[in-house]
Image 1 (cartoon, one colour):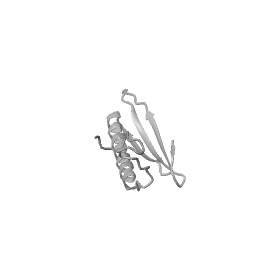
Image 2 (cartoon, helix red, strand yellow):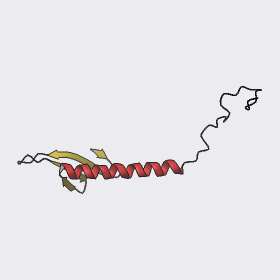
Image 3 (cartoon, helix red, strand yellow):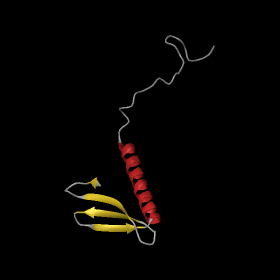
Length: 87
């Protein structure tokens, strides 16, 4: 069960069918809205959710300011007092 706001929840379960083709059951409470999906449908549904979450995460990470990142010296390997140019 996944608890949401306002006493709502999502319950994911498996329903065993007589013919052997089990179903994934997604119930939204308190409304008792039910999705009954085949394994293939549930796989496609979960893929769409994962892709949407990744888009949201990328969008939010791109909108964050990069000012908090530490600056690094671009002259790697140069000791203090030495020139970066070879003689």
